[in-house]
Image 1: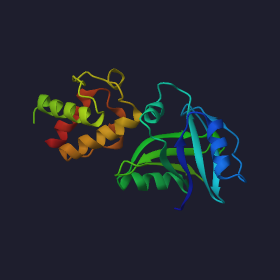
Image 2 (image 1 turned 30 degrees about the horizontal axis):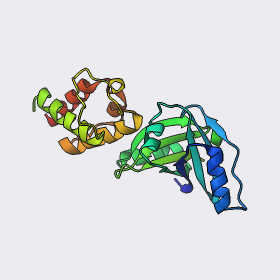
Image 3 (image 1 turned 90 degrees about the horizontal axis):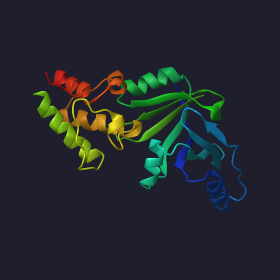
Image 4 (image 1 turned 30 degrees about the vertical axis):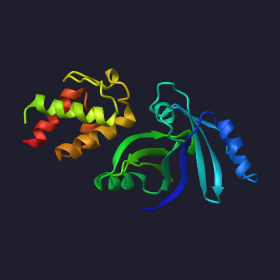
Length: 131
Length: 80
C-alpha cells in the first residue's frame, strides 16, 4: 500500500480567473484541461506547483451544493489528495483506523478511476485517488 | 437515558455545529428540513454526537440514518 501526494483542492468562483491568477505566480506553468465531474457537480482543473504536485481548482456547478456553502463561509483550500495503490485495501485500512468515508465516485479527471473522500479525526478532508 | 433527553442534547449539538440557535428538531426531522445539514456537515455532526455521548457509529449507520429519530435510537442502544 503506497500513497503519494497529488494535489490540494481549492474552491474557486471561476476556474478561468484562478488559472490566470496562478499564471501570474507561476508564469512558466500551464493548467490542465478542465473536466466536469458529474458525480460531484463541479468543474476542476489542475495547475502544477511542483513537478509532481498540483493545485486543483474546484468550481461548484450546483448552487445548492455543500461546496457552495463552504465557499460562502470563506473556505478555499479544503482537501488534500493522494494517489493510492491498492485502493480498496487502503480505504479499508483508513476506515478501520478511525477515518470516516464521506463518499466514493469515479472521476472523469482520472480516467474514470475511483476516488473517495474521507475525514480524519481532526475533520480534515482527504481524497484518495486510485492509481 | 430516555429518547427525549438524547434528542434534547442532539439539538444542542446541532445548534453548536451548524452555528444556528434557531434549529428545532423532532424525531421525524430529516436533513432536507434542516438548513446547512448537508453531506459535508453530516460527518461533522455525527462525530460531534459520538464525542458527546462517547459512542461510535459504524460507517453504515452514518450513511443510512433516515431521520433524527433513527440516530437518537442508535445512541440510546449504544448507551445501553
